Length: 114
Image (cartoon, rainbow, N blue to C red; front, side, top):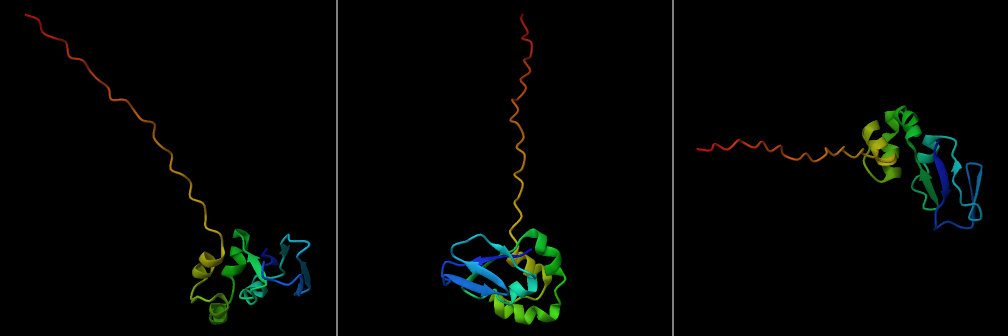
């Protein structure tokens, strides 16, 4: 579920969609819907936190709303994948396992004595 909190530029308290947000309680609170958060995304008083669990709801948004969301997000959105890559945290890449350094095998040849 999308989380919302007051930004550093916001007034002391703010009531958004029935959520009483206050500087005295800076913890983010759950927002009721992904679309409701997206249409308020450009509000400088609010910071929205999207999580991977929001992907399913983002992927189900009606593509007809992409024009509105493009204006709100300040970038052109034409696909669900673009929307998800913009809002969701980047997946952490797993570090590649390093192969242990192997010492070269030295084979000694027998010396020929005359």
